[in-house]
Image (cartoon, rainbow, N blue to C red):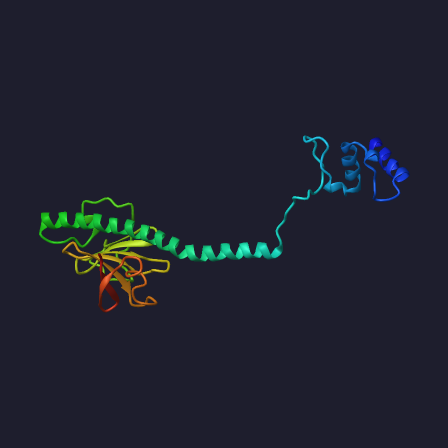
Amino acid sequence: MQQENQLSSYYKNNLSSREVVARDLPHPTMLSLLNRKQQPYFMREAEDPGQKISGMTPNFMGFTLIELLVVVLIIGILAAAALPQYQKAVWKSRNTQLKTLVKSVGQAREAYYMANGSYPSNFDEMNIDLPLTRSDGASPYFTTAGTDSVRKGDNFLIGIGSASTLFGLWTSGPYEGAGFRLGSGGIMQCVERLAHDGAGKFCVRLERGTNKQQSDYVNIYDLP
């Protein structure tokens, strides 16, 4: 600080114009110090490279409100485009698990048929242990075959219909009443309630069902 004051005094006393004789110029280091004195404090560079000067630097850059809004808008657009695909993937995974359960019950049903010559009407007649809860045998989606024809899981049910048809249906969510059925021939099909908004919302979009057939209360699609 004392050195800078001396330089400032030197220029005030000896320089009367912008024209300076070369011999009157001080050492380059002194010029640098004087120039730093004339700069705002936050724009000065440190004398020592390891020294830090508090405050903002000339290289500081921030974001304007418009830029932040544009970033938020872009994120929102990407999220809106990705969310339906994510939900579709989640439901496909759930459907795979439901179809696996229906097939397992179907195998136990066929084993019962081979041993008895007829299909079972109740779950307790088959040799199968399911991690599901026993229901009272009634179902709002199909006519049951017996008193122990429905087992419930997490938002779905597995049921034995009156025509020896197995059902695996979702009981809540956007696809309530939709699911799969397995006939006596071992062919699995996709089913939707007629009350659903838009035919094919479940079977076509999620399961690529084809050859729609309509019964009294459901649409039935063949699976690939």
